[in-house]
Length: 487
Image (spheres, rainbow, N blue to C red):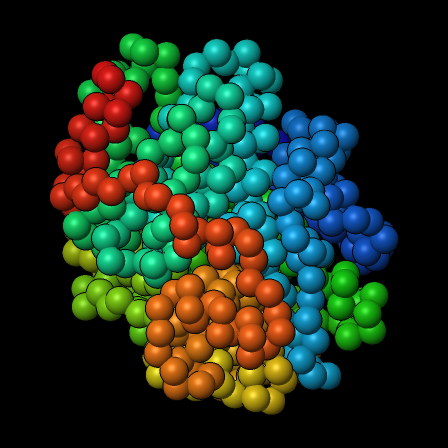
């Protein structure tokens, strides 16, 4: 299948999008023609395991990978050794509301779904192209991508991976997940800046000719583990189909009935995957963007103006602390074609405005709302009291937006992280008690009777390997990578 860049409309084939990560013109790749699933196809998917669903769906978007090949990849990615219970279970809260739990993987966040699969897709793509180069994966993270990428690639043959995160911009658990990562092929740096600084600088390295040449001279090429890489998004489309099928099989809705989805999002990848599922045939109604106080996406969906010229706020839902959302560019392409002018406006002035017709069309599919920290903590209390359900701050943002959105019919709120990754805030929200990370985990376990994931509790006694703090300039990041590689 051919893929096309959002800016200059450069074309390439599926496996090449995995290798390159970002278009040569700085754009993001999208399928030139979207696959379509009939209701009969979707009912057939309902009878399959998650792994076989993933193989069927990814094959429709990337037919260069065979179903059999993808079944092997998915079996490894979503094995019982990695996922501690059902891969993507749906938890019913009431007759109209369910929660899709995406935090049962090795790093306890939704990024595991893509980043356990991406190493397999990348390795196979290199084999298909007879490409003998060594991948250097660069990733910026607001909290969850970093650990998930490190976990996915730390045993990945000849690949090396380097992650950058904002100092003080993650939870302590998220930070320690990254700084204690095992593996000889990994490195982690914090930067004196925010996620937008890290993401912007990582993107700039993809077009830094001196950097690229230095890598090429030693047999490396640079690619991304962020959701700018199509290999991230294609795996995320799967769990929307899976959740719909599971809800239908459980009698929560009928096949063909429309479903609303509410997605806590910062970089717009997770919610974009829902929209791509919709235009591929999944009967979704409203797709609701749920943001924290960094509500630039909410303002865009409600007004058509994207303006990142605002204060960057550190919140209790750090994975959404983002003001420049990369994957929005893909959505803009779907509704208006080339994004080159809009992205130039964003780079030069920090803002852009779309036409009234475009935002009206976007609003026919999307709604948006946001929650402050105080409102998300109140929702954590409410959901625990009324449903005996423990939600993390990101999920609480989604739930708060759901209750205010006045949606018709059945709805699914996406839960993106384990509450135990943010145990002090969750405990404080429920009981008013303030304590440290691991004490909070123990108290929540005692209070709820639900064991915290070993992947989190085992961090307590692990020594940190990576403690270097960089400036926020791209040159600092570039030199640190080159020094690490001895180039």
